[in-house]
Amino acid sequence: MAEPVAYAIGLKPREFEEMQPGEFLLMLEAVNRQRREEDYRTAYFLSFVIAPYLKRDSKLTLEDIVDPLWMTEEELKAKKEEKARQEKEHDRAVLEQEFAWALRRE
Image (cartoon, rainbow, N blue to C red; front, top):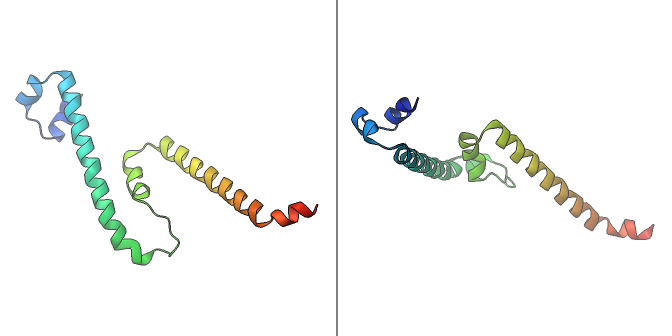
């Protein structure tokens, strides 16, 4: 099961056979870290390309571009729900601040 992964990351059959499981896992983590860094670098330059087409108040971040590549659907859903909860709290705080005078009259 690990052999296709090993060959996909560029290991030769003999190199894979000589590796200990721990060494293979460390190498796999290093390759994933390198790929993630490349994805962030690509997203950084992509943000400059798409910037003219976004609204002025757009809050698009590098994480918004890269996270779908590296997170599971459950993690993305949880992150989206957390972001919605934070926006709701922020909106509530702004409304309470803006309309505090109306609340004091009562």
